[in-house]
Length: 368
Image (cartoon, rainbow, N blue to C red; front, side, top):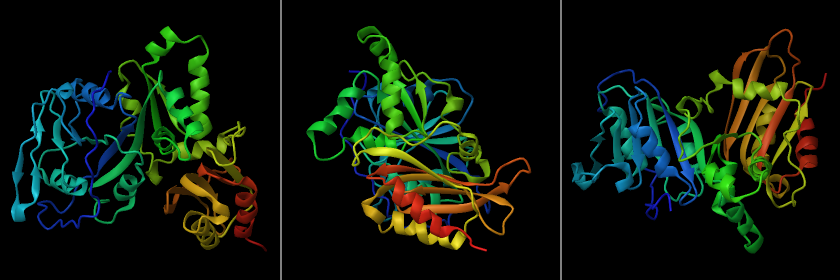
């Protein structure tokens, strides 16, 4: 077994944070990459590869548990003020630093941003965490942390050999396996152990597996790997949640093939895309979106949502992002003269109904 991972440690995310002790008035924003994946998929191998590579970056790694495979003997845990647990950050040979989280993720992030040395990136390895949405909401739009850290992307590591069996568990259960949720929330999917699949399975299996992944999440970028050795530029500094780096959303405007996935049972987790050329009212879009995300209109359960919007009385392209009930709509840049202004929104979720989504969105149009 490639990863002998320990059971998960509960992560509290409701701590109240105070930044009174910060020495600098301005704190540089550091990107956070959340790494998730099924037990044994290769998350620890990926972290090990990153912290032992000579990439010239100062990367902080936050773990649930230290393991021997990371080359770190143990975490020093001391009693801090008021008896709170304080995680000791361990310096590694290539300049990266590590700590293990046994108490509070947000507290660990607070301690990290108070450190004086420059950081290029933060990796958060979430052992056994099936649903990264709560973490995404804290790191993406949380008022207490957004000035110091930003959610860069969610990376899911999957085992190419075992993923078909993990997905097939759906047939024998009333609930979706962890693998479904981890794929649905991912911005990047590392399809690991492709060498084992190539040795043991006939040709074409890898392509079929990618199709299965894209049935669940057609927006995610899939990267093949052996022992999680990947080009770090493809998983770090992706700006997947940054409206000022909206190239990944703008690509929706130029997408020729359909992003919607069909041939699935109505209750399956899938991707669905709707489009509307006519300008829409921003206020009406917010009301429409809240009915879908908050009230679960038509019984739909939306996990992720991305889109570009053509807002009336505005010359700016607006971008839409949502993770579960939390959403953000912001102007990104000016529409270009050669562009066809349009609305295009991609949903990833369960029990999605294209007819309800498309018809109800028409109510957002501005009538002359």
